[in-house]
Structures are given as structure tokens and as C-alpha cells.
Amino acid sequence: MPTRPKPKPAAIHPHLESVLFTEAQIKRRVRSIAQELKSTYGDGEFTIVSLINGAIMFTADLMREIDNPVRLDCIRTSSYGEKTKSVGTPQVVASLTLDIRNRHVLIIDDILDTGKTMKLVAGLVQKLHPASLRTCVLLDKVGRREVEFKADFVGFKIPDKFVIGYGLDFAERYRNLPCVGVLDPARIKSPA
Ligand code: 5GP
Ligand code: MG
Image (tube, rainbow, N blue to C red; front, side, top):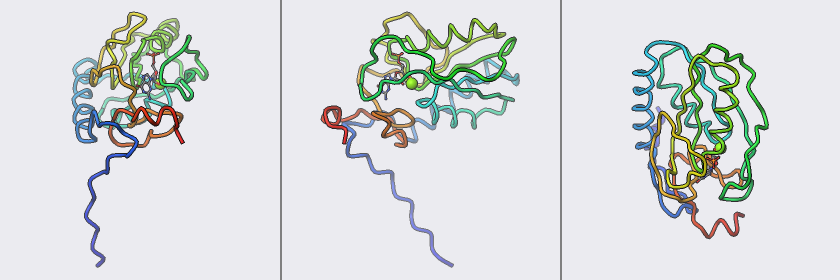
């Protein structure tokens, strides 16, 4: 029988200045958010609205920690492109396909920064008359808010640093890192 190679610890990516949250820390926090959701929703059904692409990993992992009946839909908003700060007003690029009237809706995003994206999407969802609306983010840059917005469920509060990994990108790269870390500022000038 072939022997299985020993799993190697995930190497820290050379483009990271530091790791903020390891894969194990994220996993533990995702589990505890799932418990928080359980105490809010009980065994009831709710509809997840995931903001793609950034929330893709968080949504996929969180959903697998939930045994409630859930429906999933996605919204895509305009992205930063190759910048590290949001400029102007975000726009909805692709909207909902499910009917959410009278449904309990949970919007999930990767990170709350200025608050503009969540405010926009929450406003859009609210107009469709859900039974309830709550929001959940993995990361919250509390000090960066430009419009008032408080998420109902927050994974981790973080300082004002540009972070990548676990779904979060810089110029569409690094989403597949299993951890969340601060991008080496030298990479911001030359992403290649
Ligand atoms: P907001 O509208 O709150 O300013 O920005 C929210 C969106 O900006 C998030 O969905 C995310 O796509 C992006 N964003 C904000 N901060 C960061 C960050 O530190 N790293 C990455 N990769 N994206 C961020
Ligand atoms: Mg995003």
C-alpha cells in the first residue's frame, strides 16, 4: 500500500507582510458564528445573499456549519480593480434571482470597510420586503466607516490595513490563500 505523504503546514505566502488570522483561527470563528446564527434563527429557514466574489469562501464554509434549511443567492457589486481603497459609489453589477419577499434574509460579505457596499445592498434587499434582514461579515475595519453601518454578525475586527486571502483579492489574485493576511505594500506598486 502506498504510504500517504505527511501533510505539510501551509506555507505563508511570500507576498504577505503578516498573517492576521490562520486557517485554524478562521475555522474556529466560522463555527462560532454558525452557533450565533443558530441562536438567532433557531431551526428556521433563511436565505443567504452572498456578495461575490469576496465572500465566496466565507459563505461556503459558513453554510457547511449550518444545518438549517438555507437558500443561496448572490449579488455582484463593482470591484476595486487594482486599487486598495474604494473610490466613489459601488454599483450592483448582477442582482438577485430568487424571490425574497417574506423571507428571512442574511447578507454575507467578506469585509466591511467604508460601509457603502453593505448599505447599498441592504437598501436593495429591504425594498424587496423580506420578513427580516440581517448582515454578517468576516472582517470589520471599524475605523474606516464613511456611512453608518453595523453588521449583526462580525467574525473579526481589524485595523486599517489592506488584507488578502480567504476570498479577498488584490487585482483578482490571492483569493485562494487559506489564511487572511496583510499584503506586502511593495506588491501594491508592482502586482506582477
Ligand atoms: P466598502 O463598500 O465597505 O468600502 O467595501 C467593501 C468591499 O471592499 C468589500 O466587499 C471588499 O470587496 C472590498 N475591501 C474592503 N477592504 C478590503 C481589503 O482590505 N482587502 C480586500 N481585498 N478588499 C477589501
Ligand atoms: Mg467585496
